[in-house]
Length: 158
Length: 158
Length: 158
Image 1 (cartoon, rainbow over the protein chains, first blue to last red):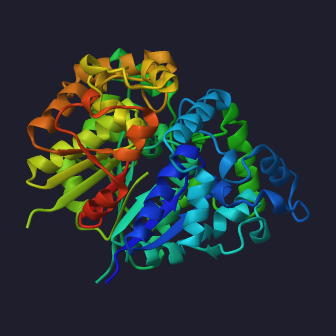
Image 2: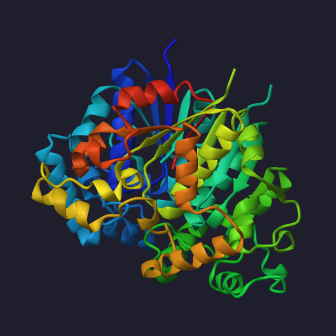
């Protein structure tokens, strides 16, 4: 039977999202099933910059929406970000080594049928609507997360 | 047999403690057993603000005790904290959405018999006495943590 | 059969490396098998300060090599670092309590035959050569990580 991997992506950092997507793509390449459950800052990764919807948002939610990252390339590093210089440096180094970019890893995970889930409560708190995220996302609550995670062979909080 | 969840709470951030307690309460609501093992900054969550005891502390320990958070509502965010403004904003957003506060989640976990453990070595290093923490905490060493964690169906480092 | 522990050390923080090595040493003391897989900032821990090699590095890689930590005692705290003051304080508190230093934990893990692995892609991106790391490190890709991790009884992302 295929091994199962469950990743809870809480962080909205470029480098941690990169690690999570490397694991997800690697697991799919090895025939494993992969669920990624995005909560809090992790939701930034799922936002589609073309689909921001301010209509039903409170003022707070609009403010948060405006100052936070929209989509993969907008995330910062978890350390040495230095107002974006560290990330630019790291991205240049990645290019020199032909390492995939975050966007390429993200699109790869979508093509490989990684299951993308968004935490219901986090979406409510942050004021993100389902229509603002990539379309294949399933909105899930903590019970659904736990059912998936406790049956997986590998679970990480990233 | 009931599924088992083991959470190692290392972080002392409001948002990460919130995620840990959401998982703990959700797991209890679904009949799972839950142990939370608090280490390093995670110990801040277990401090009872009414029970600070400076008598047996070294000067360093008193200093650390004075500048660090006391109890759930004193924790900051892991990102966008902006000297507390980010947290105030997030708490207002949570209230608008009727999301539970950290204190309510924490009290919920206590009522639901989540097992609270404090890392022995971390307590020694930080200079926290057992009497300063909530009373039901059990002090445990790394061997006891490992025995519990390796038998769980889901383990996370938060 | 011996229980297996797999730790993915992504962080380059002193306190998180300390926690990872406490778990690794504790698990070995209890007869468990332990693999530590170091990725991104976690690689800082494995650098041998005596063995920096700038010959085959790009300018970016040399810059990153120069400004980043070299070996265990060079890491900072994940919070309250205050330009190193927080770490000095914490180290003093550890000494007062006879807690082991990070270097002692690291050497203990090496003596106890913890398996040290370095992430291949992270090494390429950061520009670290195998000869700059402690000699017993094995370089592994994500597939090798997943094979080890999905067979372990406890996996953490630190």
